[in-house]
Amino acid sequence: MEILILRDPRESSAKCSLTSLRGLPGVRFVEYEPTRRVDIGDRLLLHPEGEELSPSDRGRDLFLIDCAWRRVPSLLRSVDGVLHPRRLPVFASAYPRKSKLFADPAAGLASVEALYVAMLLLGCPRPELLQHYRWRAEFLAANRTLLEPLVPR
Image (tube, rainbow, N blue to C red):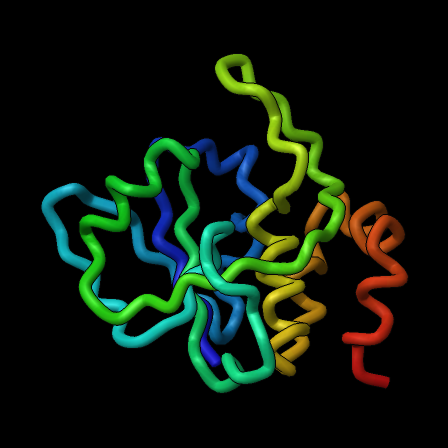
């Protein structure tokens, strides 16, 4: 199962929770360019307005857009393919979000947290996604009761 990430170059790499995933097998980054089309094929799009991710989604590749929420529509316009928007159940984020322009959302995960949870729910655990995540221990502790049933033994 491949994870494709469309990354907005306007976003700070230093603050990005996905930076450490570069070079991981099965994870591919594409930099957004307004004049370039990105063919994504047929993928699940992690998006808060989609249907909840379910076991019937297993076997499909993932697509994630890494940008500020207000830019999602712009980046989506550069995408060709079939998207199946899916949301995750509610988990607690450990990422310390602070916006000077908008109120921080009550729910929502850092991108790397969302990928980790999505892969568990899809039956393809990827613990290495959190290997270099600064708030890994806090995220796992805050969501222990929700994550334990998903982690294979």
